[in-house]
Length: 576
Image (cartoon, rainbow, N blue to C red; front, side, top):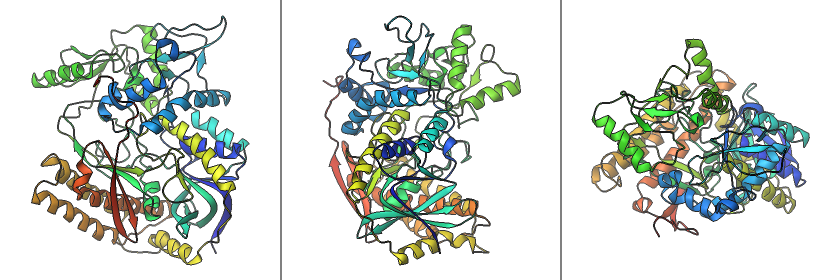
């Protein structure tokens, strides 16, 4: 018999968004359970820290003439980040996120995360507060106004864990969710496998919140050549997307593309940390091999066009490689950057490596990894939700992964997590418990645990590598030979061949010598399910139209696609 746990709200994924969802669901009277594949104290993209949090502050930004509408417009179109998205943002959700960021900051601060300081610096936004009151350290980032907080976020997840425990949220660490349970197309729970013991668990729930993280790590070949040397945690592997697809949930699908400019944000050979991005504020310059400044700093308000022109010119003139250079910075500026590194992601690893090698920002420049022009970008897929954070499947809510709803960073996860927790808790109060389908549970148990019983077959690494090979071919057929990927017969044939290869791959017999390897096997199967729908969508001509969301789902084992126009509530000021 499988172990069964009953709950009102089941949160799959205990990262930043999942913890926020669980805390607020509990605040609204729900009995809450979290399934976390890692350990909740250090799991997810925020598990190793976060030093920046863009926000809209009603006490500060209105005085600067900066409204929520301005922020939404900027993130969608006009700001440095907006120019990369080109309007491909759900502005209704983005508006909700922007409006909710101050509440998120206040909550986190009340739970012990430090946002205010006795000392702020000349490069922070200067604003008035009553005498003796501490201030936020507000810096520029990608938006057109100063709206990003620097803060002590190294232990963010530990503080969230404390709040979950305080509210008696039941936490299953090292528990990998494997599938959603349904009854008459209503979500009634989920299943999971214990990564330490291999035990199969059943979770009965009135509502499920998907919070597994917004990435499909290991779906494509890692830029570094190593799955575990990447910016996103390599355990965020499309599990939530795959479980939702198998349950009939609708997802939005973004096709592969091609870059038009060279760029960089990582130290050479260290892709896990984005130490060359805005965390090096205020003094990290990007210079070429001649010491000429390409970009004063990523957060400095230089036009994106000018930055790109400087970089491309240096490449043409052979003035490479490029470096992150602090050597002319003031001591106070370097100390501030080092403080940020100590709180952001795995940037603290950079500091440790520097210590081991005797390197110092004060005397050494650091080579950057150059991403060349014409690099093929990965496709993408995530759950489609409405403003209530619910999907098209009754009983399934989501906060991460979902469609683009702002700059993909901590504020989006925090606010949508908080909102989904409230909405799911209210939904659960209106729902009665459903009986579980024992045949469905048994089928899921066989599907997800069979590799443990196999003495022969492929390892998860072998299947994952072959998946990478297929998906790299998909990128070439979609974006490598012509703009749309489907204008010529060769590309169409190539995409269909990729789909045929995936169908064969998913039938591959896999083996696992222990529960840890079993979970890795299930991750690869999830990635294949994501890839199959992504490639099926690539065959559809309508996916390549501008200004649309392209949505897809699986019904009775058949893909169904539709398109809807991107709703623009706040059009670009620049275009006007």
